[in-house]
Length: 402
Image 1: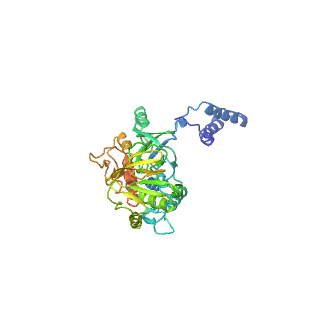
Image 2: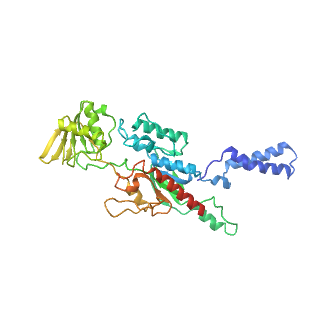
Image 3: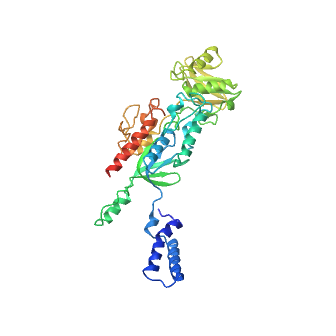
């Protein structure tokens, strides 16, 4: 990729040349010397054919896909090791956390969400979503994290490297500079193209919801992301699911005046629901404040109604909004396209070295919850932070052997 060279680089290259002309060739006047220098300068700008123009400004040692907490942790470790990197994030900074409910409180305490050894101070032991967003934003700002937001990675593929070609051309001219590493991967986004020696995938799982796959799911009244309860005040709201997100949505909208009905596929509220919240939702259901249909499923959604299949038969209820908190899944097709193997069972766990997190594809690593495949309840921020250290340690080991 050709790049226009900055003036300081031009002067840095041509000033010694001009001095050579003045001293060695014994230019007879400063005017003659300056004229020759400026003529070289203008030619350089008009016809950028120098070897310096061929600098690849889009090459990075590491490209990190995903700008969540674990992607940021990988970036901080790369910084510590002195490695050049770039994060590519398809949404905003820590996009998954941004999509959490506005009033959400984390299950973990603040120190277990820290990255890069940077303290996370919260008002209470368990931080809220706004506090987490503030923390990770300040980390990115204070550490000058290199990140491109709202830039979605479309494809990652291996490529023939320029250095291999140069090595063939330069036979007999001495050994190749070890610092001029081979470019192994080409990364194409919706905005640009990059090359990198190493890829770290830390894409999480919160961006791909499980669909209900029923008629009417495409209606504007249906959402798979719950934000703020005030929007649903005095409305008829159907909440689908029985996990933390569903329970939070049901309780918060009910407390803002919504008429809430829950549809639960199993026979009870999920056992993983936060211990201080579960008794609340159970009591609200038992007293009839929130109606719940267990062992039930949504069959069809219409503009003003929803059909529900219950053990007693099909029922129809009036409805304004559907909040489908049915869970989320990682984008495993993205991994498969890169050649990463997945297990043959329903977990679809990616193939990687448990000690280094390098996948079966050379120099491609995975980090965070995506390591668990479809088992998204095994890995969290607090037990995935160590992935970053292990990955960067492995990369440094590989580089030391080059």
